[in-house]
Image (cartoon, rainbow, N blue to C red):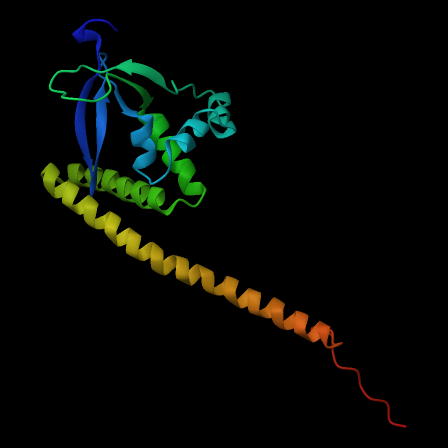
Length: 195
């Protein structure tokens, strides 16, 4: 990519309460930097890089899905004071696959983001079907509120899910105390013989 027309364009993309740098390729497709993909869900760039080499992504590719994983792209420096002119870029389908993968690994920030984006997508389809129009700033405000609600809700959910684990731990400890004192916890008491 040598001429300005062959370089990716950079723009700030609002996603609820935060912003990411987005890149538009000369063919019109979109990318995010590998760093932005990771930072958006509170993980490291190394984690995202590892995903690009992972069996999880290879499994997707083995199923006939052959995404372009990452590439070095040159950015149009117009309007840029400082910063890189080349980045490692990741297509949006790989970005979303990484976020989903992180959800499955228990990343709460990824879950909150993916759930809020999924709900927004569904709502946009219903809005279109019913002729409801909303501005992007209203949608972004709603997305921000949903992410915050999910963050609060996940805190309560994690506490609720932890309760059975705590109870199980107490039972195991009590069983061990009984064994330490010569009793079998789930054994019926022996009837004493009269004699």
